[in-house]
Length: 191
Image (cartoon, rainbow, N blue to C red; front, side, top):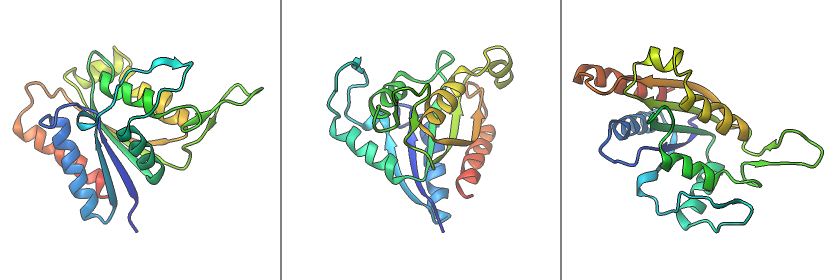
C-alpha cells in the first residue's frame, strides 16, 4: 500500500534542476502506487515574511492554509531545494516561518524545556542541490543548510528525516551526471 506523500519544491523557478528532480520524483512515486500532492513554492501566493514574529497572529493566505492541510494529510514529506549561500532559499525559509506555527507544528508547555512535537509520525526525504563540491560543504562548511532543515525544523516539529540526497556541484555538471542524479531521485521515490 502506498503512502501519502507531500512533495515541496523549495526552488522558486519551475525550470530549475530542482524542478526536474521534483518532477522525476513525482512520476516515480505515482508509478509506485503512492498518493501525491505537490507544493511549488514559487507558484504560491503568500508573504514569506513573518511580520511581527510570533508576537501577533498573521492571517494565513489561502495557499498557506491549504499547505497546512496538505502537511496534516501527508505521511511523508519530500523537500527539494537548492543550497544558496550555504543555506536554504529565502522563499523556503519564509514558508517554514509562516506555516510551521506554534499550535500547528509545535507547542510549548509551561514548565517544560522542550515543546511538544505536533507533526509526529511523519517522515521526510530531502533532495538538495548545490554548486559547492559536496566534500567541501560537508567538511569545511559543516552542512548548515542540511542541519537547519533536518534538525532545527523537521525534527523540532516531530518529522523524522529518513534520507538526504545531495547533488552537486550542479554548475558545470554534465548531462550524464544530471541523468544519474534524476535516476537517484526516482529510485528513492519508488520505495
